[in-house]
Each structure stands twice: as structure tokens, then as C-alpha cells.
Image (tube, rainbow, N blue to C red; front, top):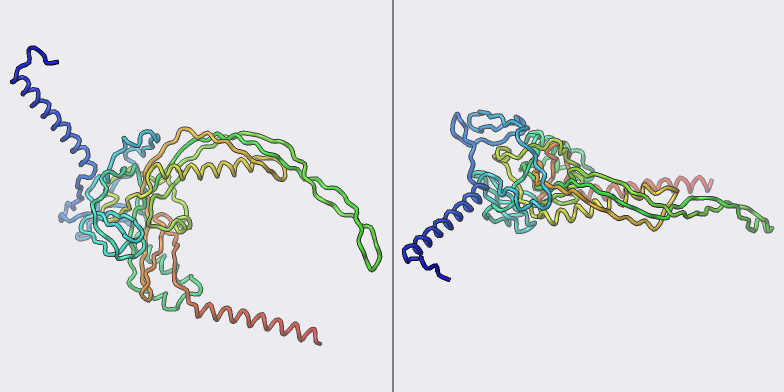
Length: 396
């Protein structure tokens, strides 16, 4: 119903005011959205060039004049959020980044400044296309800064090559090696778990049995001990806490290699700062929070089953049943440091991973089938020689 005192002028003013309010609200939303990925540069105060993070100096460094700026660690808070607060998390990386997506492995890696990427950092494929970075991606709450220098990585890689078996001799002289520092996306989860279990606990006991057998054509009686199991119902409960259970959110890195790489010391996590990404690459997560928690929950349930199994008394068990109640689930998105060493051998691309904290090296390398064939032939010859010796001894 129209208000009796409304006039065309007041209606126009109301419309204008509503429009201004809507415009202001939209501008505020746009400002909030853009602030997540607003361009941030770290210019050198000496020469004006862009600074980049250098692990060997634990500081921002200018490649032109050598000026360094310390990045103070420990300031701020490493946040952990309940699952219900995923929508309230900050978005973007806090600085302008370009991104390239690999059409082969599907990884999306963000680049800093004028950096270029003609090949995928993970699989070496040239099928990469530049695209806009995902400004709506959840911002990392914390990260572990790269702590291993490029020189140390190359030395570790050379040592790894020298230690390989059954590889081509000229592999150790591989050239055109490129070491690339990457921050890998992870989700971490904390939770408490109460588990109730029940099972049949088995206790071994032995009985002596008699039996008949034939010895030298004679029927004789013998005895033997046979193992039996006494089954007893058992039940119990346990409470466990999980802290920083990690789920890798990358699609570019082989899960098998990631597992071989070893754990990260999450006690070294520091509050996220864009400075740590200056001059380096970071992969955008492709495994979202919901999927990561589903995977983590499955891993936790398997671990709880194993722990409850160890709680069952006796010598053996059967019919184990476990009921879990998971509570106080908290998460954070983190970036963890990794070096990828790419090299080519006879036209094929190979990638090797180097742990950004421990410098542990894992990866793949080509085999020398000539060496393997010679080793097999030598082994067979050795076996044949032993057989010949035995045959001669028996003949004698």
C-alpha cells in the first residue's frame, strides 16, 4: 500500500538513496575481494629492483645490488579454524600472481613478477597455458619458509645421482639441470577421537595328541603338541588427539614420491607473509577442504582401528569392531617447501624432489638395461659355477 504522504520527489530521493547504498555496498564487496590479491611488490630501497626470498640468507635479497631485508619470524598467530568457519577465511595470496595450468598433470602453479614457465614444473610437459590466478582460493594461514639453498639442492642431487645403481654412466654428467623452488599446498587437521571397541581375544594353549605312524616298516605311536585358541569376549575404549595431520592438496606431485619424501616439521610453521613467496612459485590447491577432510577422516579411522587392535589382550583376535566419535575438528591451509630438479636424458624429462627442510632426495632416473643384463648374466654364471663345483664334488 502507498503511503498517503509520499510524493514523486520523495520517491525519487528514496530511489537515489537506495541506489547509492547498493553502489556503496557493491564497492565495499569489490574492495574486500580485491584486497585479497592486491598487487604487492617488495622494491629494493637501494636500487628499486624487486626483492626475492633467499633461503640461504633467510631474508629478502636484491639480485642486482645484494641488499638484504630481514623478514622477522614469529610475529602474528598461526590460526586454526573449525570446519564451520571455512567461509570466513581470507582469500587469495595477498599479492598479485600470474598462474599457469598444465594440460598434462592438471597442476596450477602461480608465478611471481616477470617469471615465465614454458614447461610444467612437475611433469616437464610443454602443454602449459597461462590463466588468471584463483583469487577466491583460501589464503594459507601459515607456511614453512624454504630453508635449503639452490646450491645445496644441486649438490644433493649430484650426490643422489652418484649413489644410484644400474644407471647409465653418462647420467652422472647430466647437464641442463634446473632446480625450481615451489611451495606445495597442504591442509592440516587437528581433532579429538574417542573410540569404543569390542573383539574376541584369543589365548593360545597347547594339548598333547597321540598318533600312529610308520617307521622302518613298523607301526609306532608318537605324540605331538597342537596349538589351540581359547576365545574370550573383550572390550575397551581409548581417547586420542591428532595434531597437524597433513593432507597434500597438490595434483602435480606423485603421491608415492611425496610419501617417500618424508614428514615436515610443522613446529616450524610461521604466520603467512607474502614476502616468503617473492621470487618463488606456489601451487594452488586442487584438493578442496571438504575432500581433504574426508581423506583425513578415513586415515584417522584406519589408525584408530590399528590402535584399538593393539589394545586387545591375548595372543590373537577376531571380530574387531570399532566405533569412533570425532570432535573439535580444526583445520588450516599451509604451504610447505619443496625443490624440484628437472633434467633431460636422451630426450626424456625426469623430475626429482628435494625436501625443503631436510634436503632428502627422491625421484626417478633411467635404468641401464645393459648393466642389468650383465649383472643377471654374471649371477647366473656364478650359480652355474657353484653347481659345477657341487657336481664335481659329488662325482668324486
